[in-house]
Amino acid sequence: MKLIVRLLLSALAVVVLANILNGVSVDGYVTAIIVALVLSILNLFVKPILVILTLPITILTLGLFLIIVNALVILLADSLISGFAVDGIWWAVLFSILLSVLQSLLHSFLNDD
Image (cartoon, rainbow, N blue to C red; front, top):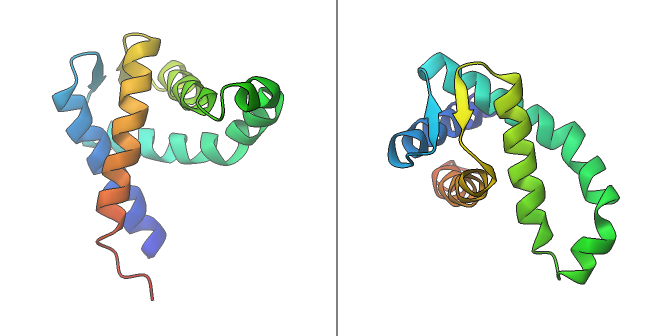
């Protein structure tokens, strides 16, 4: 049950950010739920592979390259989902940062007993 609530909160964060940012668009609420689900799956399977492959540059930049890795995951989700669009890498970086902050705020309201 908690997984579904986290997924819906992530979808809410996607909708809010798509309404705020000009370079990001989502067709509807169902698409936002699909975006949240696909981002979760990509973060589970693809992101660790990207982190390992880019480990030298991540160490060189003291971890700041992970922001670009997050943006690449978002752009990959953009190419997989037809109702979700991100205009470029910089919009993906901004979306990634704001999505992380908003998800942290929304998930902090859940009671983790």
